[in-house]
Image (cartoon, rainbow, N blue to C red):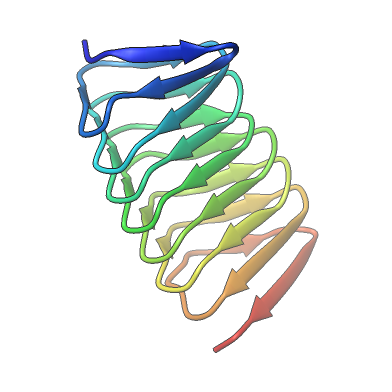
Length: 137
């Protein structure tokens, strides 16, 4: 298994790591660019997935940031907020809080317990939230 460094309750993956099988992190997890997970990713705190990274199955976390041009092939289940940055591809999102979708995102169905904010053009399935905001073209 690749090296995961810990500082307090925050964990850091090494750049360009490949994780086989399922990964569980008790705390916050910051993942650099081009890091790949071939199983499920379960984070008890907040997750920041770096640009051009991938997760083969589902993600569960409190708050999630998906880096630009990343790919998540399974559902994202978050108790808090989810932000998906430019040109990322995500299967589906189930969030307790706000969902922000940046330009060029491709996503299946999105369910939010709060507001869904769309910046620019995206491809999506059904978007279900308390409020919808569309910004830009």
